[in-house]
Length: 287
Image (cartoon, rainbow, N blue to C red; front, side, top):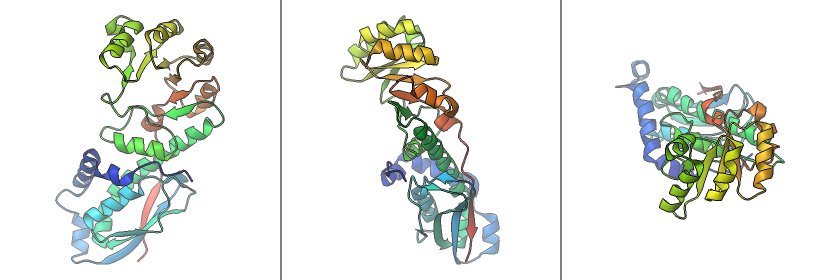
């Protein structure tokens, strides 16, 4: 099991997450759960469990608790698997006790969140395992589900990988279009350096002949975009440890190990969050 890496109480208080949960419940419930209201006209306690149909990495149980309690403030979870735990098929994520109407009304919303979060965490776990023993760490990107960025990045951390910047507002990453508009790698880095002193500046290059220009301009980190393995090895040798290097561009779990073995320090993978197989989970009542 991985060490917990997400402050769930703080995350659940984030306005983006609160709004996302409210939106998910509103689009499913509308003015009310017609089926449950027709069958259950008064409170009725029930128990249930969320089960894995495929092996997965646990992520998002605190969010599931918040969703249940949104519909039944007295709802309780027990037999909770730890965040980051690796579960086989047929295992229990948690058991719950609540009013049957709350459980049935929350079921789809709750499972939708858990299935994606567990899927992202499992993806991150697999990627992290593939780079073990190399100098590289795996990072996510901004290729997240719209509205889900905070949750997707929390799932990446739960799976053992690292977060890149949260958005455009919290780090400088000079991309190819910035370079094109600025005129050169050196000009873009120099402007960023002068206008944001003290801020780490990362610059993306797509040709090996841009590397020395990036280093001379004072980049703190260089992103090697769509370099092949030989070009990555050349960049590592040429840089000689002066700054960390980050490989990016179309990297998958199939190619990840070979990229890590070139000696780069960071590998960013949009596939961690944009190509996710959701966990197969079910909620079953038993009392």
